[in-house]
Length: 284
Image 1 (cartoon, rainbow, N blue to C red):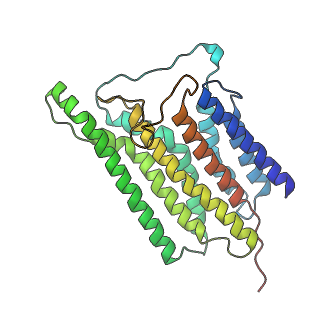
Image 2: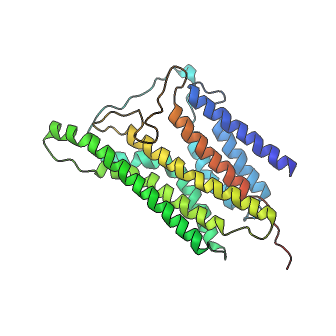
Image 3: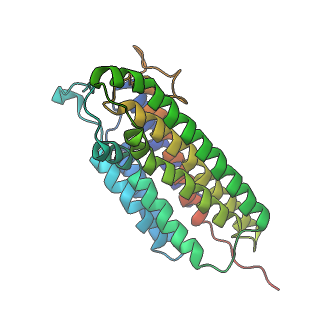
């Protein structure tokens, strides 16, 4: 057990290095996120209990690919920040923006949900009720956010073009993060009903549930950032709702991406630790 926790602690250190690099704008160890996720996937493949050996590694393939694709640029390359300018509303661009931010987490949740549905244990009614309530709250938040963003740009665009503007772009941008939030709630509900056979099983279940729950605020942070990055006719880059008060400064290059990465990677770490915690069945 001790090597297991040492490996997880080392992964946590890599996560911290990645977040600090985003926060300061100076990568401390460029492949930190890639190495951290690769270690988690390899660790889960070697442990392979109590889940089938392939489950967690398969789920983590997408985050590993995404980490490689989004690895911070080398400062010596001389690349500069790019700023979006107001442009025409494009539903395809809006949806693609949200999907690019959340596709890896969506794959993780989908794989783990499909495996969880194969089990015999199902969440109790109170768990289902709690999940339904959480889904309603998230849905209400997304509706308020989309309406707020739409109203902020409607008058400006109407004056510029003389046409009425509908909220199709905002809805399209919110689709993937919203789906991730709902899927994470469903996964958490499924995981709550598992691992009751032993104290170790209950501990692993709590870790996994915490990881699934953390993917909900991660999805909302992605939603906030996605709407803020769209080339729409309203000021962007300062956050929309949750992150409206978090702005970059001389010492904080990208606080919102750093916060999002911290929440998301912590969720992955907890999911990996929880789903690979051995919990032998209790004797009857």
